[in-house]
Length: 194
Image (cartoon, rainbow, N blue to C red; front, side, top):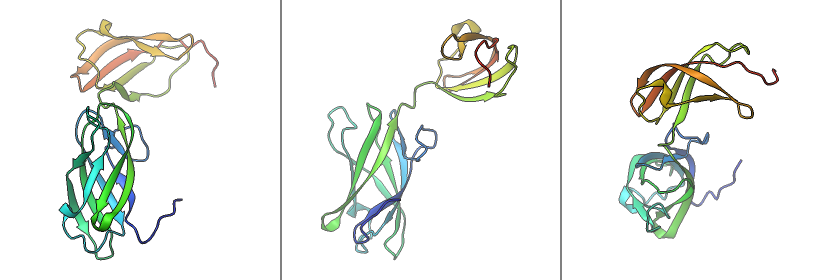
């Protein structure tokens, strides 16, 4: 629950990149511009054009200067609620950044976005998700942003943390740099079972 001043603009919803790690939906890619959709309450009724609002993001460029980002109205309602879309710039670092929206009459509001490294390899699916402790299960593993593979010996698949065992990559179904799909044979598991 969060309180807000009903006389000032307030961002109530942020929808960024859906592939990022934040469950709050405020993800922004580090490598490229990301469209972010906002819902804002108490937009001054005098604001009828998008050029009346300025959005700034601190420290997302090498010079760490404020960056003004393009805004597009998706809808403005007479109640003072507006849906807007911003195009946030790429960043050289990950983490939380506070975006400031500046309205006429020196009114401002802020919201947070979380920049994440969208070029880091990420396991996107494992099927099936359970197998026998004796090993020998065949898995289909999909990985995003993984280097192109031409041979199974170019990577390893580790199961577990301490005392980990390595699976055997049986085949490469697909490897494009954007998505890699592997067939992996699971090793035996020697830890405690649940």
